[in-house]
Image (tube, helix red, strand yellow):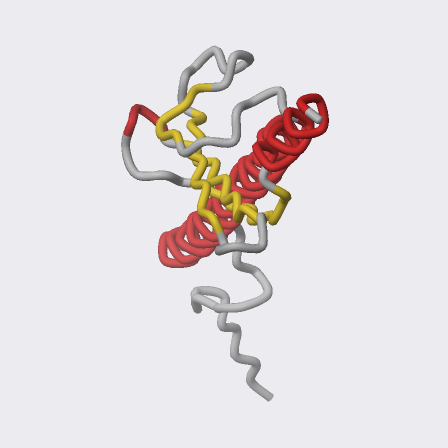
Length: 148
């Protein structure tokens, strides 16, 4: 009986130690691809957060200006490119449009607030429309009542 010994053969599989260069390159490519996707998602989320914050601030600033006009702190006249006193950067501007609605004594007031970085295109804006009685009618009525 003869026995054959195959001690000089190269075997693949179970005896292999380490990774081949191809496996390392593929794993690095998968890692870099996943990191790119994660960074893109984080960047997109950050831009969305900034946009939402600016939009919320535009709403609050617009309501504040409208409140000042309705209460009489600001005069109910048309004006453009007004700045806010509390804005250190000067990027927030507001405009007011005042139109008479006819003979019924109502005025339509439109306030538009915009955030314009470096006086460029606005990246956040909000407008608010409100109708109010013309304050001049009350002044005229008071003067007539005083004269009688």
